[in-house]
Image (tube, helix red, strand yellow):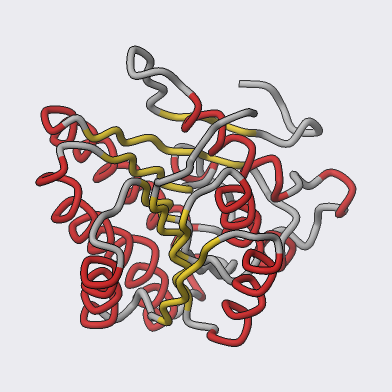
Length: 241
């Protein structure tokens, strides 16, 4: 893509695997100092090792996005150790399939805690750094279920619809400070989560995680005169529009 992210600081949530890992590696390769956030410290360190061994810079911060104090602590660490934040990739998410009538409220609450509440708090904390800078870019990795509904995905769909609601409002609020906000809405991606929530789909028709990373790089490559609010990346095997 040719985007130059040297001297930029990029924070990626859910960075330890899947889409988050691919984005982290891509942004580090483009020159960004990446902050890797996830619950899984061992897998975060694996991603950090890949980045550092290729000459990149990474900071590992363990945090559970279901816990407000851990999110606030993570962003305080960014402020104290790196002093700025140019890019937030809100990627962390969980989900579970099941019929609405059988779905436990405990599982519903867990999904909302990470996908909606946790994502909301991450954006709050990022804005607290970006507003004084009067610059920054927040990219939310949402989902096709952020605007469509699928059987057996009621809780996950509700969380992503809610996420899209606050992202649209945030985009309107952030613009006056020179802060950009976009959403990427992928179809099913070839990750552990994607295969778990859609076990009916063959691996061969799933979107490679690197395609989502390239979509992030595309957004970051745009001039200051151009803005893309949202990008829907569907499976080629699915129906258009």
